[in-house]
Image (cartoon, rainbow, N blue to C red; front, top):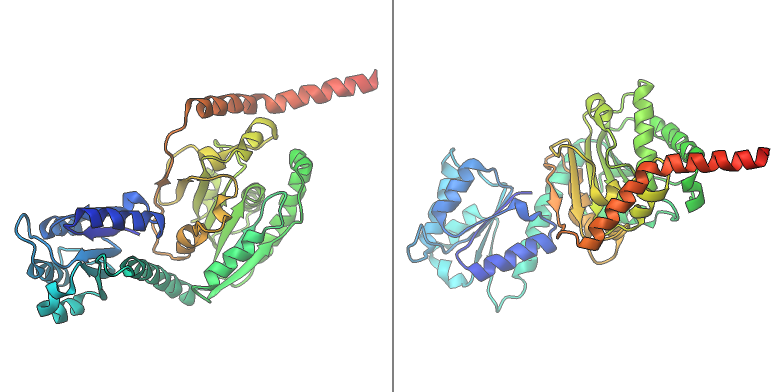
Length: 391
């Protein structure tokens, strides 16, 4: 979601920017700020914004702020085809008295005019409610007109409680999505180390996915975590090789992925119209063990996949560990996964990394080096043990 904030109150601009990034989950790169109506018009000629937050009392350039300039901007948005009209407009002002003589005109253009002052503590919640309403409206429109199924796959050493949390979060906003939770029981760390046992789980899921693709759904959105990302991606690759049409899979969302960072998605991307989102936790220390010691796995859920980021493929980096996506209080599912049910969403890069320290950088280098030789090391160990048994 692209948001344009037009406000000449610098401290309030800072407050709203924090609100949008921390509470609404909007990427800082998607928030544009300007302080007069001329700058706003210039931006709206080039960028199609989803949401406009407009201080109704503004200067045109450097003049004394006046409600008449804000009203003139709203009129131009409506009547000038050169200006790309935002999907929703919310007006804000520190004092409703400022716009009393223009209130009827403002009400024609703005869905709501909010008194954003220190005495009105609810103004931030009203802005958040307006943004969430717009997001849910787009999702509801899409999922009502199309039969959408959400398929989720959990990771190892868990029974996937987050799958139910995902369902509850989505259903608290819309009731037009079907859900399938794929469960394979409690998969131990020892089993995760054994490639043969992993392949068995891939084959089981592959069969289940093929049946799901045969249903009458218009589209399928898959969410998978940790070892679930390994299962899902390998199953899709296998189905494509068998000639199964996987185009019903509209989006594939990977979280805490144990795949290698150099994994080649070209076959999936060229054979389907699928969009792939790889959500990472840059403090995901569990994946250091995967990269350094577990055969045929890596830490793409920590450092991302190598290659281009675009409207088909996006790495998103967040502060947190292996399961931060499901931790209570951060509203991650609502802020970052719920919007993926809309077909109007652009895949945007989210990068909350602050820069790693000396120790972290060197630890990743050591683990990465181990990852390059681990399969050979295990092979040598097996041969050595076998020789001792024979002798």
